Length: 129
Image 1: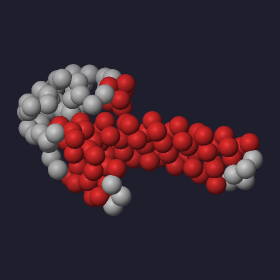
Image 2 (image 1 turned 180 degrees about the vertical axis):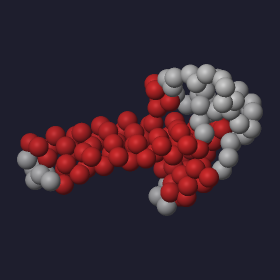
Image 3 (image 1 turned 45 degrees about the vertical axis):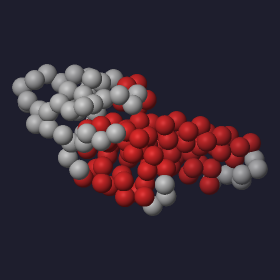
């Protein structure tokens, strides 16, 4: 458990969303997953409002494709770091690509507590180390 008297360091968002090194706790993993779901939903929603063959439709289809690629990488990175927090190898994040299994894996990763204290993958959660 974190010491409430220790100063909080600001999160490095580039590390959080794009680097597979380190560990993240359940809360950060859940909030990151929900954030990506909202980010993916907006261009998809906009795409449903316009004819697909129109220039606007092509724009929103391209925007969704770009957002999807970036958020997929970020979801995998968060999965790897969450697995590291429970002292498991990050390769198991491949399960996030399997339909149905990905939903179960997400829920399990949101429920399982992390390793208390240092483990093979870092000194503490939500840290680059």
